[in-house]
Length: 606
Ligand code: G6P
Image 1 (cartoon, helix red, strand yellow):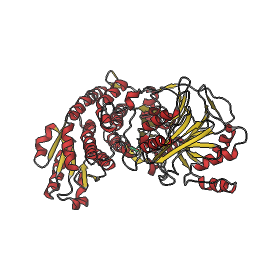
Image 2 (cartoon, protein in one colour):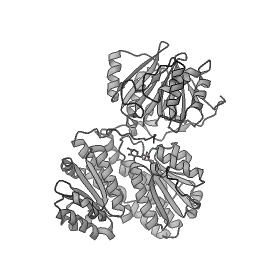
Image 3 (tube, protein in one colour):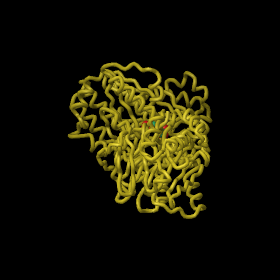
Image 4 (cartoon, protein in one colour):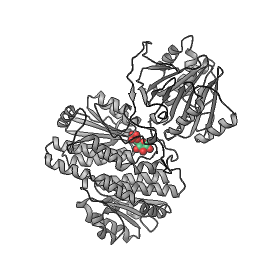
């Protein structure tokens, strides 16, 4: 949700900034802009629309020299996407880029107007530039610190000042920010892929810290301007993981990475076919004390949460609830001793999920997070973090990270079941044997991706599509429906198959097809009946089921066969054709697969 970048070094900054923005465009793509020091002036170029619009504008402008600058890619919150509302925003001396929301901007704006500042945009960000300028006497650090004290809301900021060429300041609160450490060059960035081409070394910026960067040093200060010694982190991602590698879109590349992501999780978390987590002792102690698991997540991660809830209750015998982060935070939830909050988030920066984590922490409840970004806020603020290690996910619609979250959920549930005495070590080992079959079965689904492409050719012609399933398959119906609507803009709805007859079935006709997911052994007959109900209303049906059940379902639908693993792992197979159908439908409709309209990957605002 907005990406910021900054470069200071010996090279021309324009290309580095544009390259970084390109790699962060998934964070927002309503507009983009850069500001570069050029002969003691700050040149600001910005444009509504995709990055290519900005690139065209820069070409028209001619050459921009300068080895220090900041850039921004925007997902609009305050003020419509327009040239004038694009970042960077400037005051007399100060220019800023910002990711987040300044909540008290109206009050600050009124005060600054009274002081004579002239506002040109409708954004909340412009107040930051004017506020720092208004407080800037002789020490920019002090001006920034005092401005931040007046601001409420969230921010990751890159700040430059006309009278300090070759220097960038940065700070953050509730929005991600890291400092890339190069040789005779340093960076700021919202996300690692933006700077991976240049360095893998970085510092994480903590709240309350203000960072000063030049080409030769990075100084991190506390609020009293005492220098803080930071620990260098090294990213375990390489640049190829943030590139398309010959695939036409990131989404399809990421879907095809699923087998290696699953293998990686097995290698990372299994020792002698038993789950083994970092801080294992503490981890097991927390699980032992847990009487209820409260799961919070947003979007697709929420649907992983529904799988977790199902398994924790039915498999581990422990009470579980799942709730969207945005609902959880405002309903004064009852949390009590013996609860464990489990937060699931690819980015680890989703504002609503973070708020839930913080709420739990203030109530003294232990928090376990499942995240894909080391050093993210969720990872740092949780008592225990399970890293999904899926590598950078660039397409806005999640795929491989979703599969990685599912895999971690299985291992977590198996461990919980063991700790609670619901399964023996022997049974656990047998489950792990099944779990380890997943990459191979996923591979064979991917080998038949063309079948999904054929189905998508039909799917794309419909205006409405239903997804149905029961039990764990209902979770995948929800995910399949979300995936299709978010990237192909086809209206879709997911229902638990048993609920269809309580209303939605009235919408079934030859113009509304259904994707049925029927992988759960004890529910096969019920699903078969539900599909027949749809067929009797002339609705077309595609059914995802095990190969061994294909004959049965061929009697009333077109079958997409899957491999055969224990029921609890079937979501990991069912999700693949759903992702592929959504992907190919989006491609065939000519949609922007990796950057669907109005969406952003990392939702750092409420
Ligand atoms: C956005 C993305 C979704 C994602 C959700 C939660 O809406 O488009 O793909 O599932 O955020 O993101 P998180 O990073 O918390 O998993």
